[in-house]
Image 1: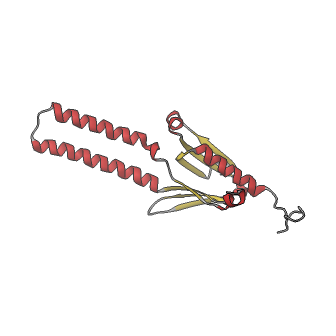
Image 2: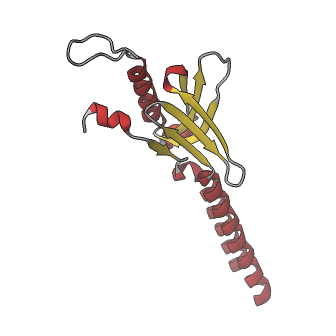
Image 3: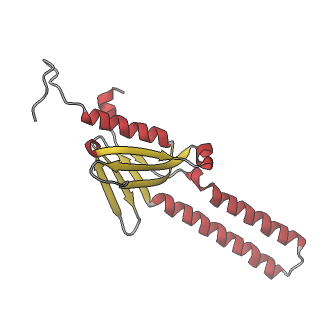
Length: 169
């Protein structure tokens, strides 16, 4: 794929499933606890069913939480802008033009480094803080490099292919 075609593409990123490792650990811990209680404590069959029913309910709630957290967050890298969309029922959207991007920061805690996920923050010129903050994105350094590369391409003056003169707007 040539560079010009690559720069025309739109890339959509969602938080990585592997970033929900604490949710998964909580489900496994709950399973172990329910299994130990079920095997070591004598109780009526109705209580056994209720115990396992609560476990199933807990797993459904945790999976639902993971699903909705992932679905409500979207980072879109377009040729001319970076967009962040958040929410399912109430939708918020922020767009920053590539020419306006001042900083793209990646932050990774130790667990995030192991899982190759991280938090991405994008700041535009003319502001003090970060307008876009996205948690648990997969391969965050690749996303940062992609944004920075597109911002550099956007900043280069366009030239007329025939004689190398700067194109006039």
